[in-house]
Structures are given as C-alpha cells and as structure tokens.
Image (cartoon, rainbow over all chains, first blue to last red; front, side, top):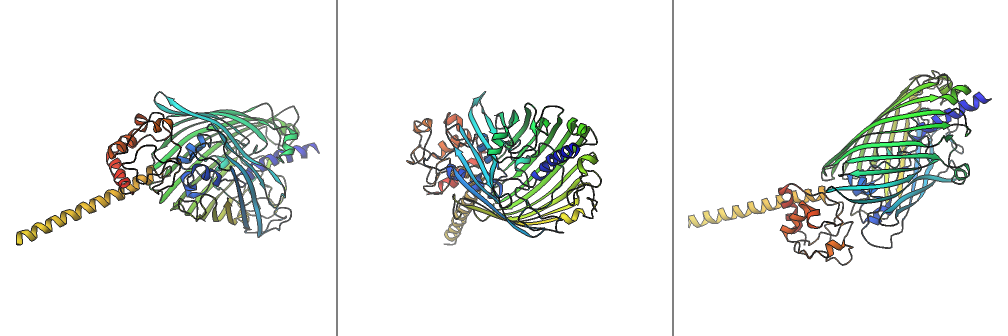
Length: 450
Length: 124
C-alpha cells in the first residue's frame, strides 16, 4: 500500500506539473487599463494578456503602480473563459466529473481579481478562480509588490519585493512558465505526465518573497525563496496538496533586457531548488534542481505589425530519496529536460497567429511513469513527449479607440495541439492501445475580461 | 509672358514639393510617435494616459492641463513648449526635468525628433 501511495503521490506531483502547462491562468486586466488610462495594447502584445510589451514589463517592475493620476479607480476585474474541447479520439474516462469523454463545452475559468495600486509604491493582483468541473472557487495567482525607482550613477534603478504564490509568475518578462504560450488551453484534454518542477508543481500551494533589482533599464536580478503554506491555510484557499517543501526553496533569476522601442529582446537564466516531503512528514526528501535559460525577441515597429519569438530550455536534476525508498521511483537519480519555442504575428493588435513547439525528455523510470492508467500511463516508463501548438485569435477591442475601453476586452481563439510523442511513444504509449495523435486537441475559446 | 508662365510653374512645383516633403515628415513623425510615445500619450484632446494629452502641445505652457497630475518639478518649470524646448526635452528628459515622472530615456535621432515635432505641430 505504501508503495502505491508514494508512487501515486510522486506521479501526481509530476502530473500536476505537467498539467500546469495547460492550465495557465492568464490575465488581461481592464482594472490596470482604467488605472493607467492606457489601452490593453500598451502593455500586452495582441491587446490581450499576458504577453508583455516592454511598456508592460516596466509597469510590472514598477509594482503595478503607474497611474493617470486620477482618483476613484476601483481595482476590481473579472474574467471568464468558455471553451469547447475536441480530441481526436475520445478519452477512456470522462474528461472531468460532470463532463463527457469528448466534445465538451465548459466554463473553464471564472475569475475575480483585486488588481491595482494601493500607494505610489505598493500594488499587485490577487486572483480567485472557479470553473464548472471543480465547481468551487480557489485561490489562483497572487503577485503583490513593493517597488521604488531612483537614479543611481545617473541611471534608472528600480527595486522591489514580490510576494507571490507561484514561482515564475512574478517574472517581469512573462515568458517563463507562469505566463508562457499557450496563454489559454483546454483543461479537459489529456496532457503529458512529466514537466519540470519549476513549471507549476508548486503553484498556489506556496508563499514566496523575492527581492529584485533592475538597473539601467537593462540588467535584472532576482533572489528569493518559497515555503509551503500551512495545511489550514491551504484548506481555506482550496489549494492543492502536493507535498511540502522542507525548509525554504530558493529561486533566482538573472536577465539582460533591451528596449529599443521598435524592437526589444531579453536573455536570461533562472533556477530553483526544492527539497520536497511528498507525504508532509519529515524524513528523506525528493530533491529537485532546475536551471533554465530563456530568450525573447519582439519586433514592435509602429505596432501595426508585431512579431515575437520566445524560447526557453530547462534542465532538471532529481534525487528522489523519498520515492526511491518507498518504491515510487526505480532510480534514485534522474533528469528531465524541457524545450519550448513559440513565434507569433499580430496585425493591428487584433488578428493573431502563434505557432509553438515543445519537447520534454528525461530518463526512463518505470515506477515513476508507468502507472498502468489508460490515456495517462507510459508503457515505456518514459516522460518523453513532444508536439506543436497552432493558434489563431481575434481580439476586437483593447485598443485606444475600441468599443468598451477600458471596461471590456475579449479574445476569440482557435487552437490546435498536436502530439508526435506522448508519455514515451508515438503509438500505444499507454500499453492499452492509445496513440499520441489520439490526444490531438482542437480547442475553441471565448475569453473575456471586464 | 512665357518666362512668367515658366516662373509660375517652377514656383508651383516647388510649393508642391514642399507640401509633399511636409506630409512625408508628418507621416514619419506619426510613425515615430507611435513607436516612442503613444503608449503613454494620446494625440486626442482631453485624453490623458500616464502622460498628458499632446494635442495642441506646441506653444502650450508646461503643466497647463488642469485635470492631469503633473510632478512638482514640472509644475514649477514654467516652460513654454516651443519646438526647441520639446526637442531638448525629448532628447534628454532628465536634463530638462530632473525629477519628472516621464519614464523615457530620450530620442537620440535628430531627424526623428524634428519629424515628431512636425507631427505634434499638426495636432491642433
């Protein structure tokens, strides 16, 4: 029994991490537009969140405090996502409770945000989200900042602290896992089991503080740590239960950013270490050490034609003492590597096309990945998955002269995710006859913000 | 008579060219404005963003839009935004208004500055 418990628990952590790629809770907040007097397109590529323009990067670094100087702004926003999901082959079990095995229409997200500035130096966002398969509201992303700017050696110097609950959500470039493409994706389709720890395994279950500094509008450094919230707090917030960090998990980030107005780029490195107690008890830990590199380029021009390209590569090393001792992992030591690349084109910040590829590879581990489950298992005991995502979207509003500005915005999107390998194989990956391409997913969505 | 006609045609052609060049400058200035300024400033009358509206800004006294919250430094600057003053400001904002609110490093290219001011001059 214990073997199964640990195995299931560790796999659930891995699965959760994998799922997080596809459950990105992306934000586009009219309350920030009302606060600044600016359109959504000032801060967001394609006039919708979360992909940031350089102007948006500076707004985030400044603690979400910029304003048009007028009082009386209410820092509240709401967001909903209605989606239709079709997979090439129906799933073995219902996609979620209350849903069918295929062709599901769902209210995927209904969020309320407290988002705005509190003072000249304090601002942030706090998101609470519900959906019609969990049928309850839970704490979603939080990023509260204290920030200030001054001149240092004749150069701009911005510094601050972010208090957040999801490592990478606070990254100023919105290109790491918390906000990377796909910015919206189906939560009713199968997704690969394995993903690096830093890609969402801790989301909403931790609280962290990271201090950052941004010098000469170019050099960025950040350092902080995360701890798991107490059980009572997690219960109150309906947060997940995927293990406890032993002590504090350090997070760090270094980047170089250059805004040339017509174009911009950033390159960087980032990382996180965590010692996890999957059963919330002291003893051997499962240790993760993630290091990543990333780069991003934007051609902005006059904002009529915008091209972007984002990429990242994460190398994860694992020492699974806890899982290995409990029989939940065949190997004590393992690795996982994740590569992402996405390019986009937007015309008039209204019509968007995005194409992305992803590739996850790692060592085989039968106990870890071969859980015997239909659709979700891996007969090879392998985490390897790769595929592509294509998306076309239409964002009719969110510009200076748009209808409803700055009170409403919406995006209509059509997205196709194709898998050339899923949980270790192209064909019969789960040992029960399911092929990678059976999980190819067509997702149509309406995403609205108020 | 022929010489007079020829002279008139030359003048007309020259004026046309001036107009074409002026229009080209405004078009380029519009592009520069959209690339460098439009996120924080609106060209529309009465539309303030993080920065004040730039409608009719050329010749305007500094800090004169009543419903915009300027920095104390800007309020006490007593600048009249002539073309030359705007050029100096957008080249090195911190040199003109050292503790101003505008988060902008400056527009280095002289032709870009000239054309964006030509565009601003057209906003009235």
